[in-house]
Length: 317
Ligand code: CP
Image 1 (tube, rainbow, N blue to C red):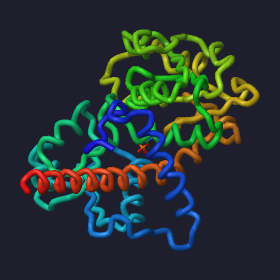
Image 2 (cartoon, rainbow, N blue to C red; image 1 turned 120 degrees about the horizontal axis):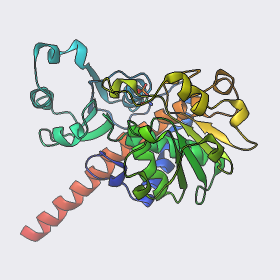
Image 3 (cartoon, protein in one colour; image 1 turned 60 degrees about the vertical axis):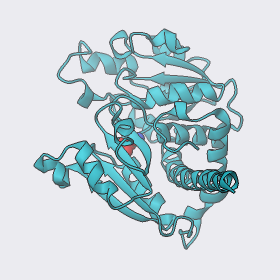
């Protein structure tokens, strides 16, 4: 893996396959054992720095670090010196003085993980930057689909909902494309990026386009990113046109959602409670995948650094 994981563009298809194979082979079964810990990252330090609310990403990164035996520090911006006016740069310079090996950052601004990578020697993992990207969500989604379908080449996926404001959609369009999947976006025009068709995807404004897909990927309305603007005539109209319930799901189709779900808005309660969705499998996969990402980022780069050192010594000698 690269030094940082900021975007799905940082990973080739082979690297995606390789990280997910590590998750499957080494870490998925660990959660089912009585003793759920391995010594792999003993002596390493992980700082989880969260400037936005999170349940799944924050708990799984914390648990992943702890199960790998790293020392894990959780910093929530609303309970830190950020509330006293400390900038992101100064916060990262401060945390960097503890010489962490990995900083996991969630932040409301696009590009914040790349920005902090200039002020720390640690590996930076993007845990969601505004409406930018969420690469570990994409990896766990690909993992969940592989568990369900096996080979993904040619699989058809419809991503439905507030695509304009979704970092998950951005990472998944990149990642699903790398895996050879065909992506269709379904949303009202106001909730699609202006250049959607240029992303190499099909675009539709109707749930009728769910016909023929293998996977329905639902997204929450990201109202915290609407900044007071009215993207829709009314929520009621959105629900009547875009809320996906069990009656929309055909035989063999599977439904994913990154969470948190809003029942009755983008997903019907009947579908949320049905065996057609893989939502809790995604949550479970998130832990194994984040363990694999942290393990591989440390181990691959340590091996590369050791090789570079040997070459330097040989060159001097
Ligand atoms: N999917 C996801 O990022 O969920 P959280 O906001 O709970 O971390």
